[in-house]
Image 1 (cartoon, rainbow, N blue to C red):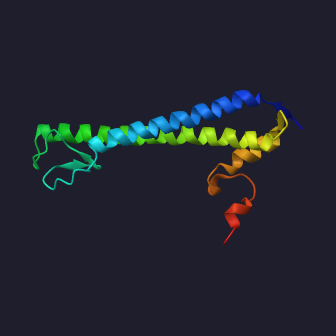
Image 2: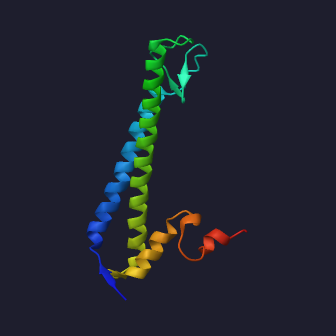
Length: 139
């Protein structure tokens, strides 16, 4: 069995950094998204993918409308991308935090145990082996 030695202080610092980064990204994304999103309730404004169009908002085909649709699409895609990076950053912190919990007082962990922890973070359909107990509860 292969054991992997880990520096718990460095891991704690990593967890704190990942969670702080995710929190900051969430705050920035939420603050910026409200400026672009369909939040003002203006029924005459044009929207695309939930983003208010500021260019080409007249509802007939013309070059300005096409440009406005492209810009709105890019804004929506960017907001989705930022959210996925934020969620991935949070998940990395959560994973390493779980590793720290499993380490307890030890400073090394078996590779198989590390793989099990990683497997638990996968969606049920992508997990290797049998479903964990949490997947079968209440079924």
